[in-house]
Image (cartoon, rainbow, N blue to C red; front, side, top):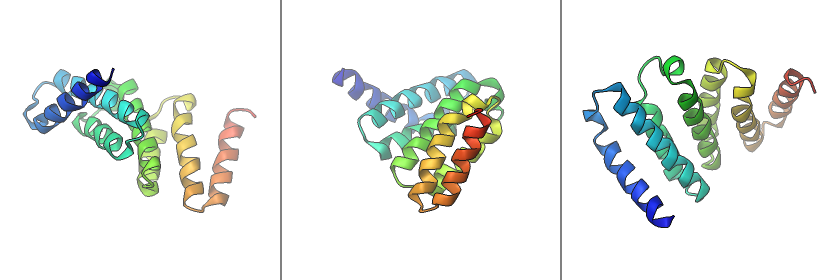
Amino acid sequence: DDKVDNVLFMVVDQLNRGKRFIEEESEGIQLAILNLRAGEKAMSLATFLASASYLKAGIDVLRDGHWKTNYDLSLQLYSSYAEAQYCNGHFHEVGRIAGIVIKQATMFDNKLRVYATLIKSLAGRNMQQDSIKLGISVLTELGV
């Protein structure tokens, strides 16, 4: 498994260096998927800076309209990126990304992961009142 991980990181790093040569949208989608996989693996290894870097690279390779054409991939990349940035203490970036997901997600359930990250991020910024208000709002939406 370690060998596969090492190869995954090396391959994705090389592909990211050559991403400017990607012409076909399908190639960009494949690279975004590989970045998601590498980002999630890096997150599981607690290498949060690397994780954020892979996930951001995956987001950056997506083309305009990706929320309509590649909804699930976009949701996973953005939600995971918000979590990685929370772990890195980049709370402002968490808020920015969460805002995008909240706006673009088509179902409330798809927003829950990023809401949870945003609530933790607000608390991490000593904004407990905002964190509590948002938590109550989410619970109300869930019918709790």
